[in-house]
Amino acid sequence: MTTTRTRSRAVFGVLTALAALALTACGGDGPAHREAAAHGGAADGAHNAQDVTFAQRMIPHHRQALEMAELAAGRASSARVKDLAVRIEKAQDPEIRTMAGWLKAWGEDVPMAGMDHSGHSGMTGMMDDADMTALKKAEGTDFDTKFLTMMAEHHRGAVRMAATERSAGAYGPATALAGAVVTGQNAEIKEMNHLLGKG
Image 1: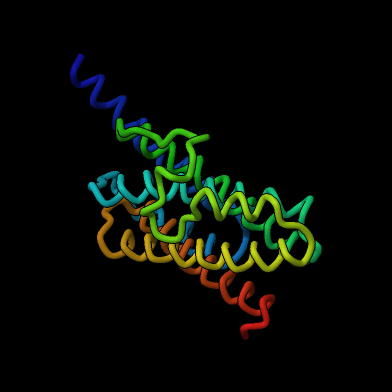
Image 2 (image 1 turned 180 degrees about the horizontal axis):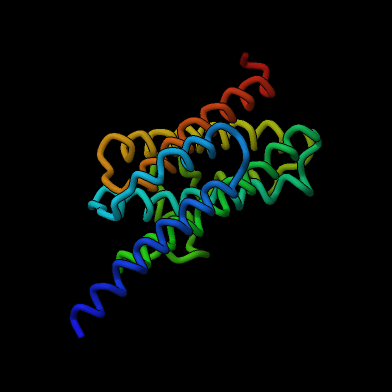
């Protein structure tokens, strides 16, 4: 009975890792996602406390990015801002599902959706309730500027979190996803700075 349970858990772990890699690869077709797919296969299934922390913190971080990005369709004036927002949604939504899958497989808590932003105010790059309210009220070029400024800061926070995971995490798919975050979001920060006239 114990052997069967152990075997079932091992099989479940392998299937979860494979599903995670598939979702990470599907999140986009740029170099960041190719990097995640290339390095994720080396995982042996072992994870540590840093991997858990990374997933539990990055999920609400990504959710806020999606909340911000969803506003762009009806409020942004720039087609390039709208396009960027769509790309952010396409990249980060699958990553949320991937990380939630890891946490469930590890028997860890998955952060609940729909919480207010005050609970994550200490997390690097997160916007507080006042920031989000201001963004929701903005329209046109005012929205574009606020969105790009806030999202660049948000991305910088994600990059810092991902860098920590890359250096201290043990789970191959998690460190690979962190590498994809660093590559992809640094490229988007550069794009946002260009749209803001900063370079």
